Image (cartoon, rainbow, N blue to C red):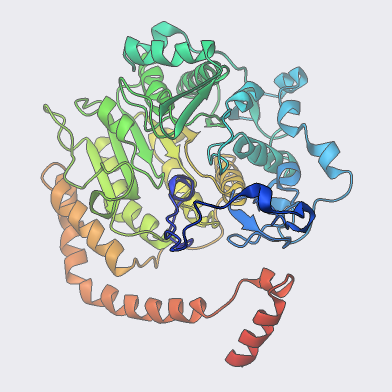
Length: 505
């Protein structure tokens, strides 16, 4: 299994193929087994952090190394990944998410100007049908982030809670068709339903989607009006795949699009949406494809259209007079690192945004591209904080590794609170494939944004320098590939770990 470059969605949807047994077992009779006590059942457990299926009695996940009894839902990313949760911690921390709804939190002083949108009823949106693998878009995502914020004293503590509200049908009609709205509402009358093979709903899903959309609507209005400085929408189900008519890709209503129109209702003339989820936000692009007042910029894995949802090439730029108001940065491979994202921000995103000059900024923040390291997302959040006079709303989209999303979301909120990343971004050099993608985007968007001409000329002249640096990076990656996971040292694979280390020494 290629675990390194597969997203959790791919793992979830993967169909395992087995070769047919050459032996004919058509005459096999279960009753012929005389002693059922001799049948050994192989234990199987799913990792709480990444949902990876593990076989056997090992205590650590074969994919991510998380302990099977990890306290990540009680302490977030601060919990040890190598040891079980502390005794008593599970009971004390199990209701962290619910505790955030304490009415007393509403009295937090006005000096706390970063707002958080959250409601525990969104945790009730779950896949009812028991399948062979847990669904990656699960309520534990919010629980892990909420636990991290509580453990670090950020929320409750330093942030202001926005009172939850279900969005109205009239507000939803600003973005979605009546067909979409009624289809989502219908699910409240059915025990379990599916919009697509991987987009589920239960009786609580419609309310969860309305709450998520309502929180995003009110956060956008509050930020633009100046009631709060900025905000983070800790919401689910996610939204950026939901289009005008259809729910898909785990998404029911498009939260970012609703927030954009809420900001415009409050007086914003031009709205910027930056989508850094690993998957292209096809729904958001569709909604604003003909709209010059909303600039949509997406950085995502594309692989020539072979990566879900298959949209978002550099040549999709908008239509009907809005050409150039859709900017796609489509990575050609998986495993793209922070340097490529930050480099694309510096060379493509910021020059276009400066020329567009938005009044309000929204980040569709998917943390499935974070790979456990929040630094790149902190850098990009910091750069976005300087846009639109700091009027910034970050909305949770994807991200299904609990340790990664909880650490990344916490780090991003710290930036919203005014903490700066503690490292320099001056000498950011991309990979060769990342550079090619940036050059392609610049060549396409140059037709609509003249300020990109100088960027393109300089990068073309510096190609040799970047290509040389890429060779050094490849050597470093090969050396890293020789290292074995540290948790092998603690489990049943410790003998293999010792033999391997001895071989390298």
